[in-house]
Length: 396
Ligand SMILES: *Cc1c(COP(=O)(O)O)cnc(C)c1O
Image (cartoon, rainbow, N blue to C red; front, top):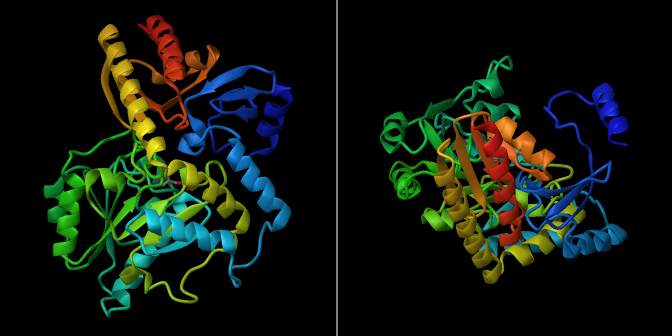
C-alpha cells in the first residue's frame, strides 16, 4: 500500500518536499497511521496545524454539518460563519477587523500590502520599506519570500520585491539603526519557528512596540505559528505584552483546514476598502465553520492553562534528558513549541524516532522541534522521552 502511493508521488507530484518514505492515511487524536497499518505518535501535528489532534470530533462535526449546508459562496455575499469567526477573533484579540485568506504566506502578503497602502493613503508613498529579521520565515510567495532573508528560500528566484531590509533578530539596537523615514513597518515572529524556536529576550517585543509607536511605524506580528494557543497563550503577543497593529494567523487557526487571517486595528483596516484586496476562497463557509469550532475549544481558560502546564512538564523532561546526554546543547521552549539543539545529526535522530513509532521534526541541521497537538498528555511526552533516550544512545 505504502509503496504504490510512494510511486505515484514520485512520478506525478512536484518534488518540492523531502518526504519520509511513509504515507499517512488515518489520524485520531495524538496518533496517525500509515498505509501499512503502522501507528505513530505525532509530535509534528502537520507543522503546528492540527492543534486539537487528528479528527477531533467537534471539528469533524462542524465540517460535516457545514458541508451539508453550504460549502462555498462568493465574498460578494455575507457569509455567516465568516462573520461569526471574525467577531470571535476580534473579541479575543487586540484587533477590530479581520481579512480571511487561505494560508500563512497569503496573510503576510496582505500585511505587507496593507502596511504600504496605509501610508500611501496618507500621502506618504515613499514610506514603503519593511524591516524583517534574519532567520525569519514569513512564507514563499514573492512578497513573503522577500521578507524571509534565507538563502535557501530566496536563491534563484530574484529579483526580489524591493523595499525589504533585514536586521538580526532580538537586536533592538540594530533595528533602531535600520529605521528611516521610509520605514512603514517592522515585521517579526514573536518566536521564530521554522529556524528552530528562537525565543527573544523578554523585553524585545515590548521595546519594538515602543519604538514603532515613537517613529510612526506599523508593527506586524507574524503569529502564524505562535498563535492560537501554541505558546500557552491565545496569542504570543499577550505573553510578551506588546500589541501589534497587524497580526497574521494561519496554521492552528483551522485545526487542520486551510485558513489564514489578517487581524488589524480599525485605523489600519480603513486602508482595506472595497476592491483593495481579496481572495476567492478566503473565509469560505466550510473553513470558517471548522475554525469557529476550533476557536471555541482553544480559547477556553482551562485549555490554555493545560497547554502551559503540559509545556512546562515537557520542558523539564527535555532538560532532564539534556543532563543525561551532553550532546544536547540547549533546550528551548514556550508552551508546546519546543526544540533541542544537538551536536550530531538531528535528521538521524528524527528518522530513528520514526522507526520507533514517533514523529518528530528535524527543523534545522542539529535542531529537533516539537510542536505536538495541544492535547498532548504527560504520558505521550513520557513515551517520546523513552524513544529519544534510545535514539540518542544510538547516535552518541
Ligand atoms: C508556516 C509559516 C508561514 C507560512 O505559512 P504557509 O501556510 O505555509 O504559507 C509564515 N510564517 C510563519 C511564522 C510560519 O510558521
